[in-house]
Image 1 (spheres, rainbow, N blue to C red):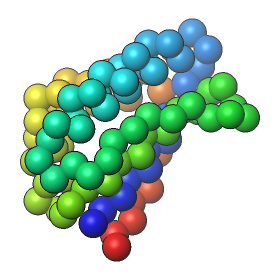
Image 2: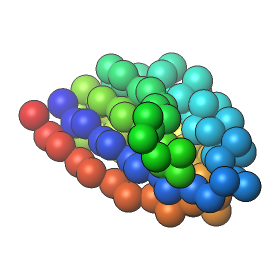
Image 3: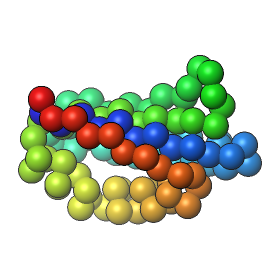
Image 4: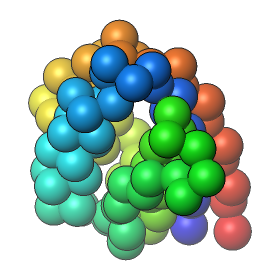
Length: 91
């Protein structure tokens, strides 16, 4: 399995748009084959930080997700709205 933690640092003016975009990405991504979990979280201590936590069955499933229309449309929007940092774990 593969776990990705994607941290998104946003400024106050972009926070609502970034959260709405992340929620749309979650709603579409949970339907992708091989998706075990896909959630967005808001930091309890920092209003400028969101995190998307995703778990995938295998590398093939993640690769297909990264080519999906919702991914190639919504991830660039998130990148415009905030700075993204990715952590990847395989287990």
